[in-house]
Length: 89
Length: 382
Image 1 (tube, each protein chain N blue to C red):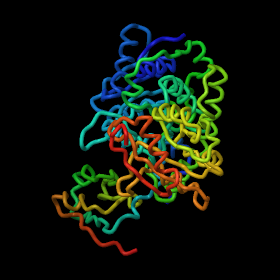
Image 2 (tube, one colour):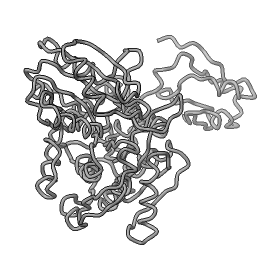
Image 3 (cartoon, rainbow over the protein chains, first blue to last red):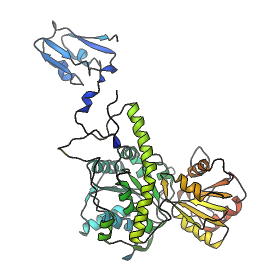
Image 4 (cartoon, rainbow over the protein chains, first blue to last red):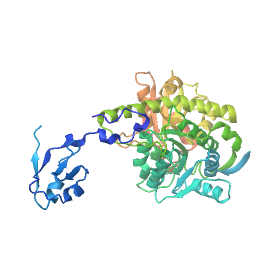
């Protein structure tokens, strides 16, 4: 949870530290990718506000460490290849 | 060198001597003559500083945060509504521990709109984490501006400072001022070498980051400790200034003026000059002037007010919803449990004159009272 050791003014002297904060635990819904329907068009990747969707020949995949479950990918997918499911923790 | 000049221009000369890298200025009455004086110094080729004509006070303080975060020396000045518009960034500057110096030419706040002096504008920033030093005279405002950078940039402080001077009463008054020589100020105030907050492409850092509740709470506590610890530096810098330049203001924190009497007035700012005259004329009262209001001089005041029978807190602010001034409650809280009567005058609001007779009458009326709170209405014989 803690993103920093306290310094004067909370200044962070190590670059790239935001990657240490796993914001994915804020999530209620998670995206399920149907890679049969997926055309690898990359629309979900471009719309993802977190920039955490990667696409290769096998299909689309989200980095669940940072996915907040917003559902924008599912909303934008023209092929209905993404559905949002309540995540059971 | 002694020179007759306006209080605001005295401050402008002090700022010039401190060699700030950037001035981010937006004029507002009665602080306008400070940017005016600085612009003149630059136009005359006497000062080499970047002068940004920002579009609002919010931008002025935002620019100062940027300048200071980049590791440079920043200055701005404002009053009243201008300070209120800055407020969001004022709090950020303290939380980010940026040693910005800002001169506040104190003016009341709206509504109704009014341009004259009281202390409601800086009292609105009371809990922001900035140091607040209230000046009695123009010479003190000039001297305190120079001291403020040395206090703010001290490695043990790293906090922004408000130098508060009363609008018109000080800012627009002409009198002889001692302006120190550049080499004297250079010897007193070294160039700012940022160690915690800077802009260096080879060493990228993040300033003003997001914080979860626990680090946030920890940093707020650190901020609270830092401003309390700054009191020793305020005193130390004041004493060093007094030694080098020959001018002292009490112990730098409070000033005790003939205060070895059972009845004393506690006050801040230029009205202390008037109160001192009353103290001189009648030998039954003394004055304790608060110079450094934030951090609050708790120990100093407890010591100075030890054994007093009656304390009259005269202040130029009103704590709306408490039916009194704010300082009154702070004085009461530090003297809780002591056998002393404490009374309150909310005076000088919206710039109404406070006469010697007013002060004397209040003393006569309140001497044997306790918890009496009166609002000065502006009658010279009140």
